[in-house]
Length: 308
Image (cartoon, rainbow, N blue to C red; front, side, top):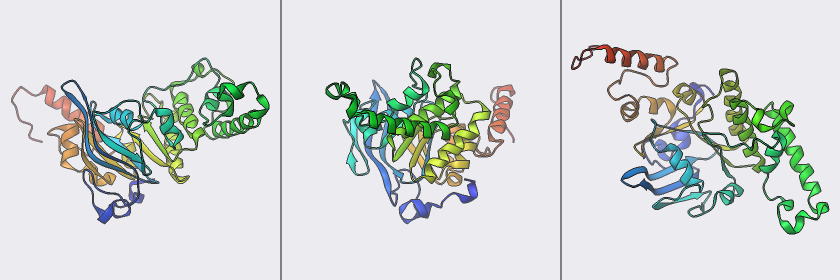
């Protein structure tokens, strides 16, 4: 999706509003007063956040902003000191991760979590939910679960072909490249037939040859009616595929709105760049311009003001 095709705020938020905590027309995930501290450090302090249904939402912010910690809290991998959150109207506080996934809210990890000594196909089968053969009492009765296993295998093969991993079907997952593991983790998440897919830095460590494939798969999830929430540092990519952007800094949501609006928000520029307000984070050369300005600052005598 190009920036020109990005939905307007009116199509996503009530009354066309934007800004931290704005209400959405049809949110699939709502968090209220979620707070997580580690000693004196406040990692997450989110007053109100709504994720729009059937959209791609990017969660951005500088390192240490609390993005992954928020992911962990919402999916049951960590417990906050306070707060409530709901997925499709169902409270999730205190729910264990596997129960959250069964409801249709799945996630991937910044560091891929594949089982290296199992084959790619076996990794995929593990992603299926409600497997009859997982229970001890029925595991010894193969006639009860063989049909389901065939259906799961067919679903796995379909997804492996879609993600162009079918040639790796029988290989050990440990033999895959970093980018292929990212694809496998995303494909395995789809075995649950989720409604919300949460991707934690899906492009991290992926070579350029696979990046476009990952981008296409992410936009493809939206086309199939799923909701996507992803963490990313590549602002050009965010502007290219995101319908809505949420910005975190120091644990809090400091801005949200359509990509073009957010990229020019002074709060976002401050969070990323400090005084470098003249850099467009979403532009293709934004990172290069920022690097050049930082080098220029480093070379300047102490106390000398930049005149550009």
